[in-house]
Image 1 (tube, helix red, strand yellow):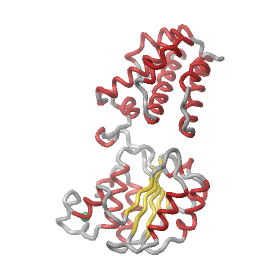
Image 2: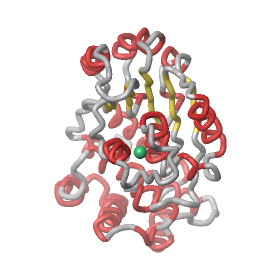
Image 3: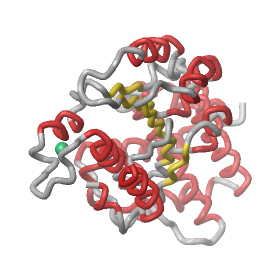
Image 4: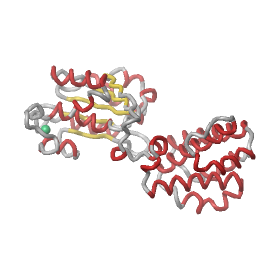
Length: 313
Ligand SMILES: [Zn+2]
């Protein structure tokens, strides 16, 4: 229920509830999630308000209502979800969507399409959808979702009603997020065994590198590739390394270790072998390479290159 978000997301709640009660919807909504752990369910709750005609009945329960269940499980025929195909949302995906949306709805009079990770709409793909965003047929509602509004093309942004969610760390719900990073940051004890192991291996990798330098490359398979396999894992691993070096930087600048107190001994040793400038350089290199991973599918030899760069060669 949308009402569940009255406290946690008062501004978004007000805008959405107002639209629902007047049955006056924008052509397009752009949700900026800001890492809000429950954003998916909030958006689904909004969609149910739009599509389920039973929702205001007193005995309505979205866990048992057939229509709501279909929406929850992604089986509602008038909802189309677009997710990036590889690194980008492709023009073909959007053309196919528009073709599909030219047909009339089978159930009810509304159709909704959702574009997840909307920052991955590149210019070409975005251009193909601009007109559709601006002058859709009656009853079509677009929902675009992004974690970062600044990565959204201005031409898209200006055509949508922005719904900004606010970050809500306190009520972080483990069941709703598998983001290992937020767990490290806010409640380490909630990590699964597998996640803990992955985290340890990444830290172990850095500790090994700090002792063995270029030789790390020889053992790259065992130290890294056997553990970090998918692109998602790779990005998380880079985030972990960045956070670890930030803590090293904390200690070197006489501040407190924030996240990795368990590794204080190792961090002290790294501090004794590095200058502040060296740590800052390493942080910059990690951040740069992480950006490259985001936008470039080719991660071949990436880790070898990382070590060579960290070594300043
Ligand atoms: Zn329902």
